[in-house]
Length: 165
Picture 1 (cartoon, rainbow, N blue to C red):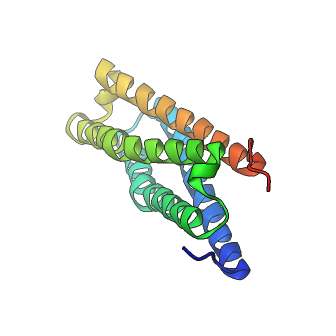
Picture 2 (cartoon, rainbow, N blue to C red):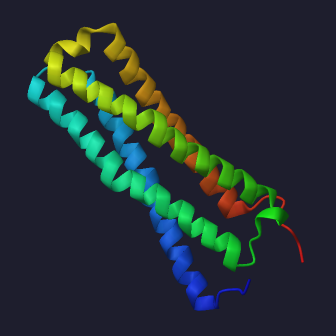
């Protein structure tokens, strides 16, 4: 395959870094909101907090995560950074795919279950052990994702074990 020209690669890098930044920031904001949910006392505030988290997840975080993955795939195929030659890149791809898949198939459905509980039970859901357990799981899941994304950003910056030419 042919390589990208320098300007195209710079544009791709800007898009990749921007998408990763939006993904990371979305997770951080969602984590803060889920931490604050335990302090909510009204039904409306609880419902809106969940709706905000759900909207961020669906319309900001998920597209940013997928765009990050897609631009990464383009990088691997059309630039000097080859997957087979760089351990740090393999780790980055593995973590990125794991985060996206776990978010789509675990976090999003759990958020939907929690929203359904709020809509049917109301603010009393905050007193249920299952709701509290789900809220704790989601909060720690998001914090763990933030830390993993931060690790990916660090290895992307330092490129440990980078192949020397």
